[in-house]
Length: 230
Image (cartoon, rainbow, N blue to C red; front, side, top):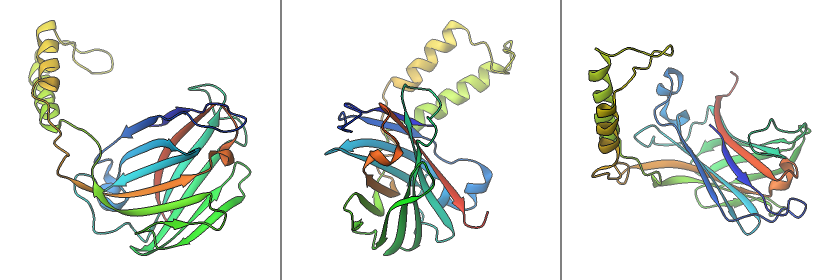
């Protein structure tokens, strides 16, 4: 999943104040064996002309620490128009390697594959590169994502119960009748509460000058975790 954001005044890289978010809790089997590499949400917003990207990990429970055996990467693509493929040379990355809760290093890599900024230090507070264009923080924070988990679980059961006697589309999804659709809408909205309000997540946050990812009018941001050596 990608977060899309439009930049105002692409030449000067002044940014429109906006926020984008993508969510994916409790992912596939590989990351389930190491919750510290399971990406929950990727958030994107702007602050004082800088692009801020944040990644929370841990499934439904925050792990004790970020993994020292994985790389955490924000992929930042420059685009001339929304939903288009990134222009050549406009794919940038912010990659972090974490040794301990108080020791990490991060690189900003431009579209030509060259490192354009670097920082090393203690991410539990905030570490800033010598250029001042890269700031990184990692630590435990309250889960900022609003999610009505109880409603979703009820809706899933409703679909499963209804599917047994219904014709399915070619995709395998059941063709729900109007009554079931109405019931689902109620289950997902009525009495909605944030079931994530009491949860904490490990969050990695980076503030970066977006110019390294190209000067397109839009940027698309997504995150990845990769085991070192794999």
